[in-house]
Structures are given as C-alpha cells and as structure tokens.
Image (cartoon, rainbow over all chains, first blue to last red; front, side, top):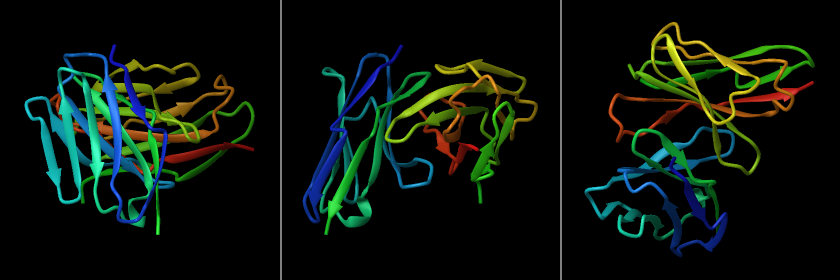
Length: 109
Length: 113
C-alpha cells in the first residue's frame, strides 16, 4: 500500500520568511495530493491540492509542487504570518488516502 | 451550511464502558472515515465505509465498531476491549471520485475517568 513520509516534523521560522514542507510517496499510481492545516483542537482543513497532471499550483501565499518521477511533493508558504502556525499534513491518494505524520510550523512574530 | 458534525466535543469513559461517538454529514458523500490522532501524531485509520450498509477495517480497528445504516451517519463505538482509548477522534467524508479531498469534522476528544 501507499506510504507517505513527511519532513521536517517541526519547523520554526521568523515572520515574513518562507516555509517549505516536503513529502515523498511510494505508490507511483497515486494521482491526488492534498495538503491540510490543523489548528489546535480542530479537524484538518484542506488548504491546497494538486493532481498528477499538474506540476505546480499556487493560491496566494501558498504553492505546491509535484515531481512524479521522484515521487515527491512540497508545500511552500511565503511571507509567513503568526496565524500560519499550525500542524500541516500532506496526503497521497489513488483509491485510499494516506497521510504524512505532520509538520508543526511555528511562525515567530 | 454543508459540513461534518461530530458530537460530543469532549467525552469521558469509565473503565469497562462502551461509548459512541457521533458523526453526521450533509455533503451527500458516499464515503466516510474514522481516524484516531494521538498527541503529536498523524492520523491512523480505524474504519471506513464506501457505501451504506458496508464498512471495512482500517489499520487499527481492534476495540472499535461502526455501523452505516444511513448515508449521512457513521457512528463509532469505542468498546471496553480498547485498552488505551484516550485520543482525539476525527471523522471525515469524501465524494465519489478518487481524486477528491476528505472533509473533516472538528473531532471528539475522549478521555478515561
């Protein structure tokens, strides 16, 4: 089955800096890659996703890149703000969705 | 507003007691899922259901049971056989196609008295 690895497990950046979170997946048949943000005491919320027919997608300060050959994808957050502080999860899916272990992002004012 | 509602937000269980966590969705989604999240950990799949009256075990089904009698509802029972039930439980639903996101509720935190 699919296995998703996510790095780093914790990330601390200064406000205004960029943050990058990386994930790798094992099943080359996976074709859908969502990213979720989870705030304390809440459920994960979808922030951006990418399908395998696209190499990059942007939404304001958030972008995701996908390298199908290397089987890895990354989340890029630019101009980070304190409200970006949360746990971020990547996932990969063909039929079953598998999640990475999460990255705790802290943005220091 | 369409979404997923989990209740209660906090739940306490006594030793030897079964408790049931509620999950309701009005997104008209066929698939529903239950995950367990331990502090600082990722999401582990307990059970999932692709269609009414059908469900499958996930990676950590022991000590849990589910039912799917209605499309909108997928309750999870944490039985007394689950020896370490303290965790944050998340319910999710998804539409028909494989390349769609799962939508999550805001979770139920279960603790042992």
